[in-house]
Length: 261
Image (cartoon, rainbow, N blue to C red; front, side, top):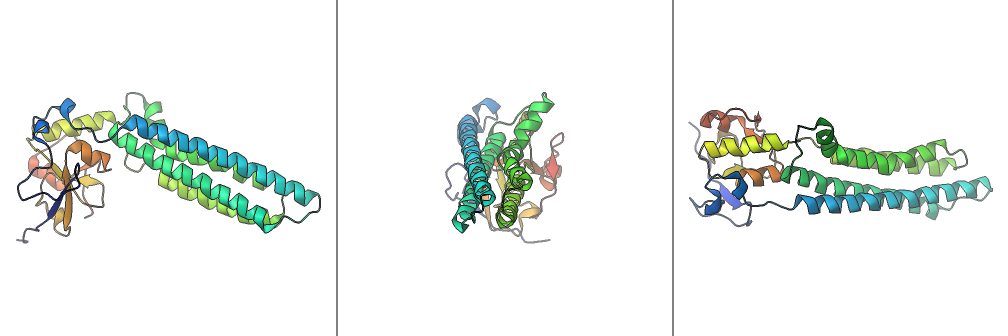
């Protein structure tokens, strides 16, 4: 039988190391009443900031488009496009992508705090793909503009298009929600953990699952764990219950996943 791994447990709410036997969940939360769960962030504020950043990305897009048209006009007039013009276009594209990416991370964080309901499939899909949509809106028009503009010199077109395509791929990948969770799924998980009389859950610095047992076989290679409520675990993008823990606690009816840790 494998020797039990000794872990350092960090509280999700305070960031402080817990003493042996100490709970990361305040006593007020151990009643298992869902409405009494501690807040894990302000989803509305995160979404507002995300939208502001996406608006800023569109502003960068407009400025970049203006610079592209300006470079095309210079080339059509027989004037060599200065390298500084290309650097400005590249810089605006990069800033565009940065705003999109940061906005997408904030939006995804908000989705894990206050998930959309699956009752409205269209809204659920939109809410979980806003990062990708924002990337397309902020970058695809620039790529099209450069490709169809016959007056743009070849060097500017090739270099700036490559940068824009890379920016689109990176921002789209980082904006995609790989672990979407619905309002119904979150409620089911909170209720299932409460019904099992489990006061706190654990998760590792990486991965997408949370555990109900510190001595879970999947945690034998991990030194440090974070402990907190189910809501805090989901807010930290741990949206699935460990398969082994679910089996040990006989928890059914919720999404589980075999951990990679």
